[in-house]
Length: 90
Image (cartoon, rainbow, N blue to C red; front, side):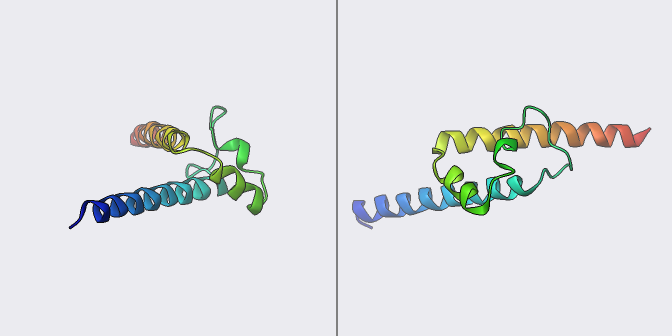
């Protein structure tokens, strides 16, 4: 495979990854998977936007910001879910 073909595949994978991240954030925008978002939720500011406003907001975010929002969500979800499971054991 030529070097330029490898670069194109890498670029396509990068675009696909960003699209996946945007889709995840758009899903989280619809609602918090644990019913109620916390005060520090970075997605809460876009929850009330129209669909057009949402896409504009998500598309304007850079890859690093998308990664930070997703990391925050994963950490928050795991922490809160673990707490819920511990409370249900009693």
